[in-house]
Length: 584
Image 1 (cartoon, rainbow, N blue to C red):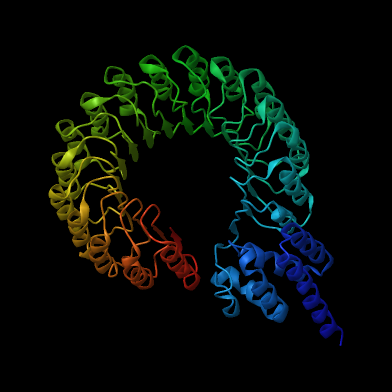
Image 2: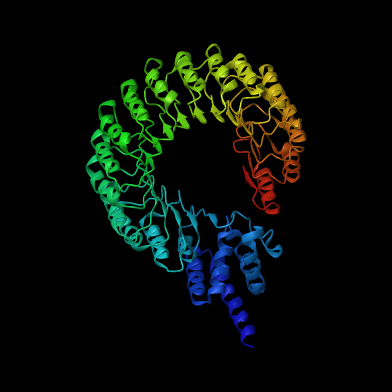
């Protein structure tokens, strides 16, 4: 019968691929598979493609996978159709491969396997991440060939740090000019230079180009090469997210970007200008453009040494009624307590800024006191506040805590890297007890908390109904401190879903107590235990934890003291739990 003959042909083809792979010729095996698949009917092509993207470690399981495909072609097609709903691998493939795909979001690592780059041609995915693989210009050329395929449905293409250069960007730019599906392009960390960015800019001018998000962080762009990009952005009606951070634009380059923002046809709403060499003297053009621009809602100027005078200019823009900025990044900009007053004054009356990052500035207690005053104002709409490494101490935290106790908008607070000590954390704990405090995410990494000072925090968390994400990493809690934190989690009123306990001095004996408590916490979704002293002795306990928590999505265990066998056993737990990631 024709159907039986077709199945026999499939099995014969599969054996040919296995034979080449066994000989160690990975490139030849993948090339043969590519040729076979492109000759077959669409259903089988889709089947094989989806099987491959399910594999994280492709080669060791290739034979078993291909055999299963050969035996169960028709059943597998139906199973994969249902998989979009269940996100479960078919029963006969469980144990053969590890499910690292959720829906259509694919993470494919090709490190050290350049021969399998050709598999790119098979993929008709929505999200394709190839970042941090050594593809080079030739590998990206193959990806470009896939984008030309009318069946290719890739919308998000991440090619950060893949070794692409200006000489290899031409094929990609050419296909992007006419591709109708790619809306997100990430080329960060590639040595494109001005000439490579010029090619990308040419693609943006094409009416068929649909790119909305463009990331060009650290690609070697300079002020002299920014003109082509800015010209394209000025008239392009699709790009709404532009990140050109980490490039040596200087004041002159930012002036060109500012001119683009002044153009009414420019649709950019998210603009990344971190570490571009902007100074306070060059900020004036940007501020002028932002004062009248109606589209930019997210601006990141972190890492530019503008100082107090530069931030003063930004503050002036925030006061303008036409300024629509909602998220403002000002990390490491040289802001001090004496220069914070203008910013705080603007924030007190600004009705749009909801995210503010002032991390890495020398605000000190007096500067944080000014920020706290803004939080008291009912017109202040800040929801997320980052104050990492700002020189805050226990003696200066009282004003902030007082504001947070009655503030109804702040839901995310990060005080990591400040020397709060036990006494400072005690004050933060008092805020958490207040019924009007709305904090959901609390970052307290490396704040000098010890086991003796953890009790107040634990007491507050036991009755707090809002905190869902707590990070205590980098504090010297030890087993006794972790045991206290565990006690808080036992309380049914505690709503924590994500818990960070990296680098806290946890050992095997302390892990047993933690596991015992967390096993009764069904709401926990992410647990970070990296940089501790866990060994193979606690693997059985961790196994119990993983099996008892059906909602757990991620457990971070890197930089501990597991043996290769222990790591393998922990990773194997992913096979029985679709959607679980054990990072060890």
